[in-house]
Length: 204
Image (tube, rainbow, N blue to C red; front, top):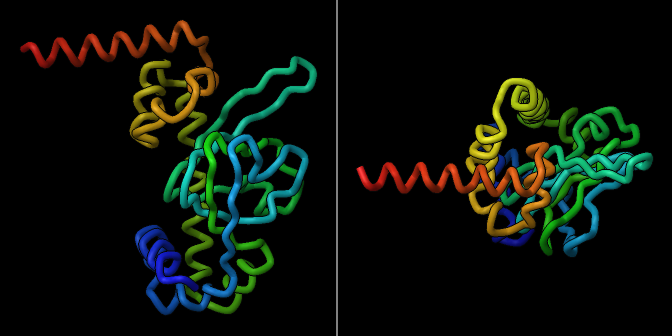
């Protein structure tokens, strides 16, 4: 494994699940690198998600395509340093209900499902990693559901900026509006309210 790749994995995996250097080194042979051009897919709707990835470069959207209405609904985004997967599809190895599309030229490090199972069964720290990973994606899914039910569109927007600080500069506004469940005009009004509020605070 290249030095840069090893350091990247060490930084991500040690912080995420407390994996030690020797724990990560036993996984070195399983990790692979994949470049995904803008507009291409990490995984497609109705296809089993076969790999657990970590975004090295780029940003992805997770969206559902409704063939009856021809609508696309953005559900999540993944950016640098984050795990990328359709977790339920990956966990149970059945077809995914979402597309995962690169919105920029992207690069991912990934481990295939069978290899991750080998790590789980042969190395106790990796079994713990699997539990923490499941908790992570449960938290992500639950948090998204609560946002949709209980948060205002503005609160959702601010949360999105916390999770992906440069997302507004990197992707089209229509993707952010779809994620928030609003039209582009409403997103523009939210941005203006936030900007006006920040300028008002600076004057005080």
